[in-house]
Structure formats: structure tokens, C-alpha cells
Length: 122
Length: 107
Image (cartoon, rainbow over all chains, first blue to last red):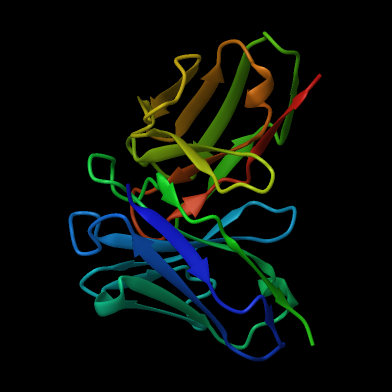
């Protein structure tokens, strides 16, 4: 059973870069489950798609965040990563990584990490 | 980009009653719609993909319908564990987008 686990600093200073990693375990990182997503949720708010990355390295980002977001894949470590630059308090959120298991329509996310809370504060 | 709008924002329902949640897309998305349930402190749980294909382990009291721009999630007889926030999400094209959510609360 594929499992995802987010990791990274829980506190980031304003104007700095938020960096998170999602580690994939329990299954094939390079198999048919080839697209990986980051999604966030500000406190008390709804879900916001940040972007998705394919195993090939192709990326798709939210237009509202595109200028500040970079996603990458490290196949040697079974990980994919998120970098968000020039953060402000509005970037405070729980950040989830997610993907889709084989047999489910791609981009309907049935596998989620538990989420990691990131607070932007000095 | 496609905007997803959910209604109502809050739905107050008594246990055992039927709940009907709506999701509207600003452009046609065929059936490329997912529904999620989220409880406090937990990640979302996929209920449906393809608008109506129930995910593994989802009880039959949940049903999804619709295509094009109008979609519905129905819970036929609300159980205590169903009180949660529900989100729709399209995956018709990039960028993906979620609706704002509907909170189903106990009446």
C-alpha cells in the first residue's frame, strides 16, 4: 500500500523559502502512479491545489502561485519536493502531498500524506 | 481556468435524513470530478472519481451524479460519522481546482 509522508520545517520566516519533501513508501515510485501533487489548507479554510509533478519531471502549477513555486522529483530517494519562495503569513497552512493509485482516474487523489503544518512568522 | 462552486456552504441535517450537496463548474468538465470528505485533523478522503465511481470502502449510502457543469453528492441517510466537510474537485485540465466546501453539521 503506497504511503506518503511530508517533512520539513514547521516555521518559516517571512520573505524566506518554504521547502517541503514528500517521501513515498510501500510501492512503486516510478510505476503507473506517476503524478504527484501538493495541496494546502490554510487554518479554517478550504483546499488549494498548489501544483503537480510527473515522474518525468513535467510540472503544472497553480496560476496564483506559479511565480513562487518549484516542484522537483528525486527518484533515487523516492521523494518529491516543493519550494515556495518569498513566503508571507498567507502561506501559513497545512501542506499535503497526494497522488492517485493505479485503477483510479488520474488526479483524483486517493492517497494522501497526513499533512504538515507550516507557519510563516518572524 | 475552471472555478468550482459548492452549495450550500453549511447544511444542517438530522441523523437519518438525506443530504444533497451541489457542485458547479464554470465550464463543462464532462465527468472529471472527484468528491472528498474531510474530518478535523485528517487529510481528505476520496469518495468518488469520475463523478459517480465510488472509491474503495465508501458506503453505498453515498452516491455521486452529474456531468458537464452540475454535480451532486447525496448521502441517503446520514450517520454520525458523516458529519464533516465535503469538497469537490475537477481534474478536466490544468489548473486543477477544488470547490470551497460544504460543511454538513448536525441539526
